[in-house]
Amino acid sequence: MSTDISYTPEEVAKILRISKFTVYELIKRGELAAYHIGRKVRVEGADIESYKQKSKGMSSLPSLLDPPASSERLNQSISRDEDLVICGQDIVLDILTRYLEKQFPQIHFLRRYIGSIDGLMALYRGLANVVTAHLWDSDTNEYNIPYVRRLLPGHQTCIINLVYRMEGFYVAKGNPKNITTWSDLTKPDIRFINRERGSGARVLLDEQLRISGINRKDILGYTDEEMTHLAIASKVARGEADVGLGIEKVAMQFINLDFIPLHKERYDLVIRLEDLERPHFQALISILKSPSFRNEVMGIGGYDISLMGEIIAKT
Image 1 (cartoon, rainbow, N blue to C red):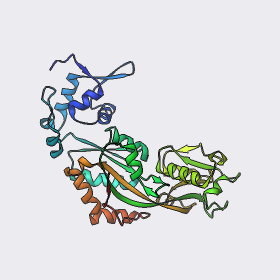
Image 2: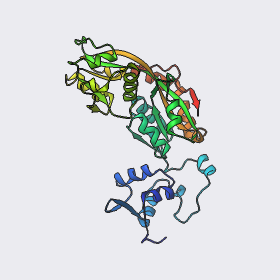
Image 3: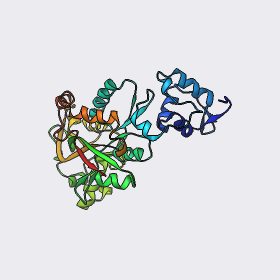
Image 4: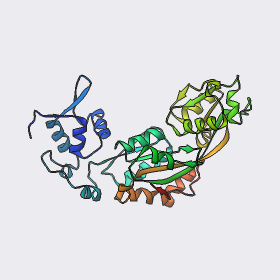
């Protein structure tokens, strides 16, 4: 191989048979040398070979001169340098990742803490392997399936339940401002703190405002955003906001917060249907159904695991 040839991250991803996101992660961690030309990232061929040689599974990695392996062969085997990207923010995903790492120590399981819509778009673009969604569609009163069909056109997917969670308002202890309904958010003395666009909580809020005929401009703080349920709850607990929307589990971590339940949501995993029969995805479903995993999640509190591991739909 010529050492004076450089490659884009997209080309490196094809060579190593990993996602483009994984390539950027390797560069960020310093495991793969790269350089910039303006805003463009380039990787020398020699550095790709050096990375392959340093990898534990170098015998299973392809040479730059090797012909591409068939998709069937790739789906049936687990490369020692294969990475799987799991998107979502719930602590249950961290536990699930830990279980997967124990079964497949040769695989890098990478976590991306992003919202539901961004996760589905990452799956569509090939930048993620497992994503979570809790997106309510008011027209059908259905979770996730309508959004998966819209955001992944032409792609067959499998939707698997992880947990059910309760969404509601975080308010100060004793609920001194008597916030109980969506319309209460428009009271002039109520300061709201919102989630970012694309998150399931934000979609739920916007859908409820739409069907209730509430103008978002009438909500003080609607444009103030935080990226996680924990950040929302913390801001209310510190008195920097009067109310925010999030899941019950997070409210349980604050002694000076009350939780006003509003909407039970289905929190699902979404994968590509073609991946369903691969060993590590079958292991994922087995973990979800295992007594040890279910007992650990139950011990946390705040979750309904009655359908955990069940296939909700194949789209």
